[in-house]
Structures are given as C-alpha cells and as structure tokens.
Image (cartoon, rainbow, N blue to C red):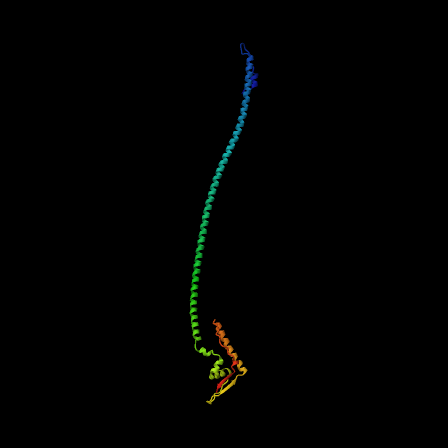
Length: 252
C-alpha cells in the first residue's frame, strides 16, 4: 500500500546514541512530504488527464469505428447503387433497342402493306382506265358510224323535195295538190275527160285551213324535238302559212 504524506509526516523513529539529528530528519521529512504531496497531486492530475484522454480516445475510437462503418456502408451502398444503375441502364438500353426494333419492324410492315395496297390500287385503276378507254373507243367508233350514217341520210336528195313548204309544193304541181287534198281532206278531185284546160279556183274553208296548219305545226315540232334529242341545232324550216295561200289554180 502506498504511503501517504500524513504517514510520512507522523512517522517516528527510535532514538539511539550517536543517531541522526532529529531536527534535520524532521526538516528532511517535511521536504519529502511536500514533494510527495506534490508528486501525488501531479499523479492524480495525470491520472485524471489520462482518464479524460482515454475517454476522448475511446470516443474517437468509437467515432472512427462509426466512420469506418459509415464509409464501408457508403461504399457498399455506392456499389449497390452503381450495380443497380448499371442494371437499369442495361435494361433501359435493351428495352429501347427492343422497342426501336419493334417500331422499325412495324413501320416496315406498314410501309410494305401501303406499298402493296398502292400497287393493287394502281393496277385496278390502270385496268379500269384501260376498260374505259376501250369502251370510249367503241363508243367513238359507233358515234362516228352513227354520225356518218345520219349525215349520209341527211344529205339525201329526197330531203330537198320532202322539206319544201306545202304551199310551194302545191303551187308547183297539180298532181301533188290533188294528192295532198286527198290525203288531208279525204276528198277526191274528179278527172275531166275534156282535153281542154280551164282555170278553176277552189277556195279553202277556214276549218280546212286550220286543220292543215295544225298538222304542219305538229310536223315541225316533231322535227325540232328529234333534232334536240340528237344534240344538233334545229334546221330552220320556212313556216307555211296557209292563210296566205287560199286560192289555187287547177287544170281540170
């Protein structure tokens, strides 16, 4: 057990003859006590400081351990994040590549389908166009034949005599007059055996003139309707006014 300063100070020694001087010994003990007390105080201070330093060292050791664990955890987390990021990036690249390939394939398929549809439509239009051209050529040939036939018929010399006004026709031919009177009025003009000719004037009644004029007008209307149906300009025919030709000279 370590000595205390008080024990050193209270320590007594037996006296002997020719021993140490008690006064000197006491003075020395006082010095030893003072030094010892200072040494003890310093030792206590050092122990307290050492304890404090040990506590601080333990704190720093714990902090170091914590930091080490944090660094390790951070490194592990960083590695995990890096691995996760790499995996996600790889997945994204793979998905993007797959989607792009799918989109490219769909676009190619749609483009090919549109091209096929356009080709089929072009073929159909070409076939229909050729068919229309064929029908148009046939119609054109038939139209030319029809027009030529009608032109040939319209240029026939019989039309000149047929389309003459009735009054001129009657004035130029007694025989024609008799035929028209017989056809329209259903009357016969008796032939005379006398070879001598004489002038006879026959006056038409208003009813006969009206009937004859009505039939002439109907013939003109039918001719105009026929010309309009064939998209031709109507041929202007001189109208016959029977009221102006009421008296005819007959050779009987």
